Structures are given as C-alpha cells and as structure tokens.
Length: 255
Ligand SMILES: Nc1ncnc2c1ncn2[C@@H]1O[C@H](COP(=O)(O)OP(=O)(O)OP(=O)(O)O)[C@@H](O)[C@H]1O
Ligand SMILES: [Mg+2]
Image (tube, rainbow, N blue to C red; front, side, top):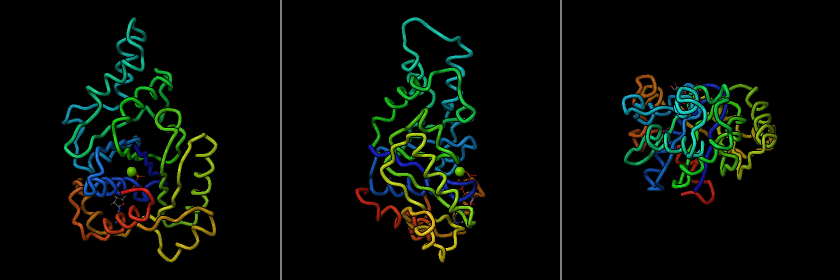
C-alpha cells in the first residue's frame, strides 16, 4: 500500500493533479485505488466524475456528527472506532469500477470534538488497508492529516504556483510536516500549471528539495473543470496528462 498526498497553496492545480494521477494509475492497472478528498471545498469527486450526494454518500464529518452527536455519545457494546468504521463502509465509501472515493468533509478541518482522533484513525486505518494506492487531496496545512488520517506517507507532492512566495511556502510546509510528525518517504516539489518553467532550477537552490517536474498548462483541463466534467477521460495526448505521466514515471518504485 502506498499513500500519496498532494498539497499546496490555493489554486495551484492540486485537485486536477490528483485526478490525472488517478487516471495514470488506473491505466497502469495499479488498483485498487482509494481517492480521499480532504479539502473542505470538495471538488475531487466532480473531477473524477462522481456525484457523492446522488450516490447517497456522506462525508466522514457528517457521519461522525450523526453517529456521535445526533444519536448520542456512547453505546454499550460496539467500540467507537468500530461504529464509525461500519458507518463509513456503509454510507461514506463510494465504490466505483476502477476506484473508490471518500470525502472527509468540512468539520474535519474545523476540528471534530466528537470522537477521539485515535478512534477515527483506527477506523480509517482498517478501511484503507485494502488498497494498493491511496491518493489524498489535501488543503494547505497537513496537521489534520497526521492527527486523523495518515502519519505514514510514502510521497508528498507540493504543487507550487507562479509566485516567489511559493518557495517560502514550500520550505515552511516541509518543516511543518516534520514538526507534526508525518513520516514521509519522499517530498517532491511540483511546478503547477502556472509555474514558469524557467524557474525550475530555483526550486533546488532555494528550497533544497527535490523538483519532480512541471504540470503543463492545458486549456482542455481548464475547460473540463469549468464545466464540471471528469478528467478521467482526458485524451492520452493531452499535455497536462503527458506531463503528469512523466512526473509519475520518474518516481522510483512506482508503476
Ligand atoms: N493543467 C492545467 N492547465 C490549465 N488550467 C488548469 C490546469 N489544472 C488546473 N487548471 C485550472 O486551475 C484551476 C484550479 O485547479 P485545481 O482545482 O486543480 O487547483 P487546486 O490547487 O486544487 O485549487 P484549490 O486550492 O481551490 O483546491 C481550475 O479551475 C482549472 O481550471
Ligand atoms: Mg483543490
């Protein structure tokens, strides 16, 4: 099992990157895959052609609230982690043909007081165990990940945008990850679609971190996102998909 987290500042292209990464892994038959939307804005599902509400699925935050607030705190018998695990299996997990998807929901980031982090981590640990790849689309900071989802991450991709602030952000992000105790195998800086290619070399000199390549700007992607359509049927020759494939191809040990 490999856990891959994509993070970065707002609008740098994280979610579309995760969607294209899913397409890449599906084509390599590196399945089963679990996509985790840890962003409160929740648009990963749409980018892979899933409507969670229509599928009758709820976010982990909603299930937590329903299970432990609305229906009262404690119940004799079943341990809290088992109770939420069962609810997530039944009502949270979207099961598709080539991937499954789980949305974390809003309250996650605000902090959920209703269940000890350890119990949720146990439940998610049990659920995620069956996957070969877990791709997590994460908002800015990663503190919430460590507390609730994954403290063992194989690869972190930090997608950067076109500002010099990006370099400072990446250094800070890398430091925060170490401070909150996320064990991460590898940390790659990825140039987002708007990142100027001529600044590639600065990534290494200014951050001391590995540069994993650049996602190409691609009007097709912009159009698909704008119209709310899936990126999974992006044509093979799309520059964005080609660049994402190239990034993933160079990563040692991955398909
Ligand atoms: N490769 C690309 N080429 C051109 N435009 C792109 C590309 N990838 C993403 N975009 C555009 O940039 C916008 C932001 O992309 P995306 O949602 O993937 O970024 P994000 O970092 O996840 O944003 P947020 O921080 O809001 O979650 C999208 O609306 C899309 O139109
Ligand atoms: Mg996003």
